Image 1 (cartoon, rainbow, N blue to C red):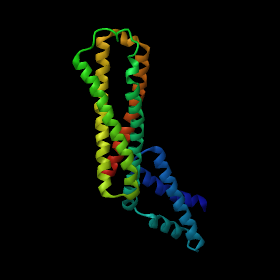
Image 2 (cartoon, rainbow, N blue to C red):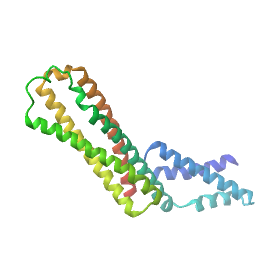
Image 3 (tube, rainbow, N blue to C red):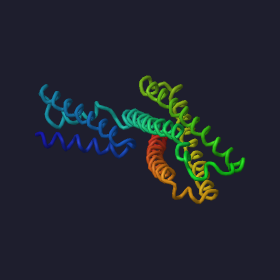
Image 4 (cartoon, helix red, strand yellow):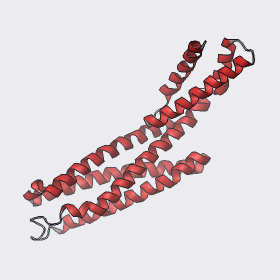
Length: 227
């Protein structure tokens, strides 16, 4: 009996899983909760004396159709993806803003002629970009839970706009940061062998990889929700 119940539940869960996209852990949690609810409903109907086939049919049918469940689940996944992106972004932006200048302190070229004014402008602009990124990440962390809690259309749209703004700002940050690093190497050959610079470049590369994955997850989850 139990094998048959689980086969019906598994089939329904596979259908839902194929229509959802988002953070793996959150998606697994949603599907686990759904499994428990369906199995409990089947057992309750069996205890009322319904035949197994009827109990299974009612449990699956009354739990909700794809039209009812998928938008709600996908909205939660999109919110979770934005929250994950915002948390990673906020942490990394704070570290980069606070520790970015440490890679230059004590270098052999820091006491030499100042770099061009355009270089200094790009460097200052990069700090501004990261400040904007941190502000957008904080806004996403504030709006996301409110959207998930109340589900108001007035909050869904701002959360989506903040998410796209954050993703765009990150892309701009990648471009500006890469340009500044390449320019630094062009101005000072010793930058490639300066240990703090090497460590900083390694840490930043790992951070960008994590952010790109998180941003991709949110974009795809949001696209699935909009579609």
